[in-house]
Image (tube, rainbow, N blue to C red; front, side, top):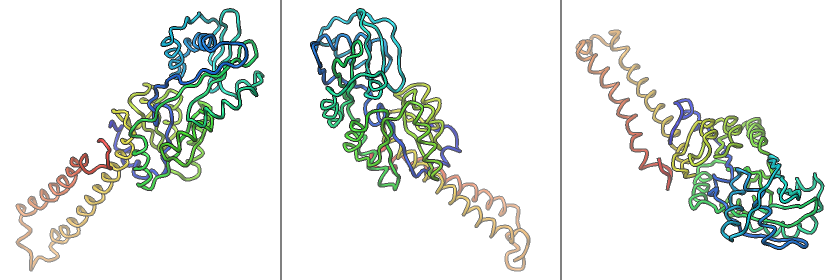
Length: 340
């Protein structure tokens, strides 16, 4: 872990709520194409070819998964023009003279595009934990393309550890609610905030803080950066974007979500050590000051030697330093399964 300063380390022990981004944090962030469902008089290959043509212009990880899927099937991907990203909703472009719109149901409703023929398939795909994307050509629904992002092997154990530490764990994502809830069930998260616009994550963090919560935000993407900055403690995954890492207070170098519990446990251990050091410093002074003042001179006058005073002062410093150095063994005593 990289921790940006002692203030962050001191604050982390007060965290009572951990907010986790889904894509790239709980999941691997490398999605794979799973389903291509044509609706109407378009073939599966043509639908995927048109969608991949538009998505090839996008930098989103889900778009990359679609393009990889189309290339793996050996499809011809025609060039697209007039590409435009619609944050939190989807993308649009022209392919072979046809206007293509790809995104979520919110985008289609706003256009408007009738999505009733796709509703049953959308429900089924979302219930399976997949992310479905609607495709419309010239204002008419053309089909659905779905991708799935695998959950990281360590995510479930990491979340269980956080809950055992008495922390509230919340998942926040821009995905539709059915997909988000399916992933949440898989990893054991009870509270889900879904269908959040890119700028809305920071608003959700702010709302939790106004409730009196001390919040840690864990994310990896560019759109997580405002939320990382808004949180009491921002924790970035090193496998994510440079902007997220810059905005965060703590960076997990291995991309392992178990590092969150390690960071909090390390903060707890550090604060405990600080309090022990203050206690022993207080004890030394309670004993040493009256002796130095000669309160017990008839009995302990021999202790007023400069040599004895120097030895006592050194013993005080050595004991505090030795107690602090016990934190070097924290790696072996961290939260179960965590890496420090």
